[in-house]
Length: 307
Length: 329
Ligand SMILES: Nc1ncnc2c1ncn2[C@@H]1O[C@H](COP(=O)(O)OP(=O)(O)OP(=O)(O)O)[C@@H](O)[C@H]1O
Ligand SMILES: [Mg+2]
Image 1 (cartoon, rainbow over the protein chains, first blue to last red):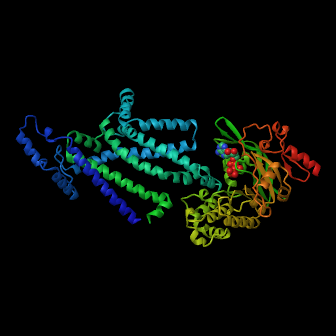
Image 2 (cartoon, rainbow over the protein chains, first blue to last red):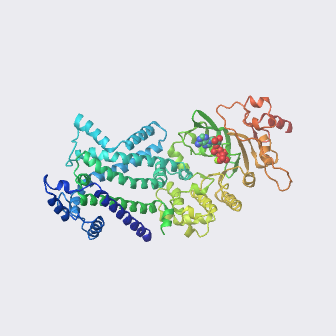
């Protein structure tokens, strides 16, 4: 088991390093950040000085090795725009983003599994069809569309919620739902199909034949085994949530890490973009490791293979 | 013999698309205490449907018990509530299935799965207190070193051991009736014999009745007091093992017996009944076996013969054999 975790962590580190490298070169393809950093009419000499002070004049390979070295030493760099260390910038906004992402993700998981389970138990009924049609719509609709639609209906027409800001609970409702809908739909569909598959297995009838009440059979036997593929799906949805948060924060002007990332990308604020992507990569990798470990708990055959 | 279970004119239908399939139709039989009743028929004859209908183990979205009664312990199980069924399943009526590997949950240990049925009928029971009983039960069904096996998962056991675990689960609450739906079909031949021996021995020890489903006539002959032959959802012949095996009356029963390979007779080619079991649609207005019957007359295609009792006590669903019977007796 320890060996398994060790291997998994090593793979995770390699993966994160690869993503960081990719983004390092990709942002540098977008152009020169010094364009906007000095007022109009700055001389070529002033621009050059700025480039030198930011080490942007050096060869790419050199910039890369320096940045990587700094990063490993714990220095993520200084934002070109805010003139502050980027780690601090993100740390300040972490709470704001989590205040949106955690409720949204929890909502997606709980409601997704609940809807999927109910749909599977009442499969091929009207309720099942309605729920699954809804899930397909929720899953295909891009979050910015849904966000704008919600702002239109609930802010402009009904005037129930403010369309921007992050101060009150009311302001959380719309961005949270917008962010949760797509992963919720995916989790619901996954739970339904996985549970339907398990419900047709003979051992479900075996459990029923013991005289165990139907709802316990569903939870203890059907749901638990069917959760194995669902857990993988949930892990992949974390990526969707993080990516979605970037969009949703911008639609609802929610001042979190996603908004910082998008603004920085627009401003070619290289260190800020790189660090933002690094954080996303690390969290997704970390969650995936947790998921792999949780398989062992759900399925003894996999636990065996860890040894 | 005291009658434990009485099934009266049971009809269970599957609804698929626009079709209504009477997979069990006008099925009546009784099961006495300590008796072993065999149910025989080709694949698709409705044996499992009957067994599952008895305890309501059917998917009610597509399956309905249309009519009939299942009288057990003074109650009609067809009308029983889910709660009443739960109280009976596993404690008074147990079932073991064809393939033990898929009938046991892959994610719980053998011990926990045996405990589950005990706990279901004795909510106050603790796992630790039950440990000794569980080990004793495992010993009884012939699982060697139960102290070790109790912590195993089903995939760590052989097929024969898995079926023994199923039997342990079925017997944990000392049921009155054990329904065994092809309990040996998925096992090796040598293991089959061991499991049958075990059932025979436990039957006496627990004083229980067994409804044994199989398409293996050898299995049936070796253990059953009475045999019921099913075809296309209906009972075509029913009598004591001796009656049915020595003097089969229904053309279908005769066909089944002729299809058994025999060691004593040298046969060029093994007989097999031509054709396969068709799927019928409700309502059926002809003898279901007529298409494959060599002796079928015009009447057999017009009218469904009723299940009638002959003077020797056996029951038969055939126009032709019924007349012959009258001459015989
Ligand atoms: N869930 C179902 N939906 C529709 N038809 C079904 C269903 N289950 C069984 N049937 C049909 O009902 C008939 C009887 O099936 P059943 O499983 O009771 O037969 P069986 O005698 O147990 O066969 P086997 O020996 O293969 O187990 C078959 O024609 C089968 O096709
Ligand atoms: Mg069957």
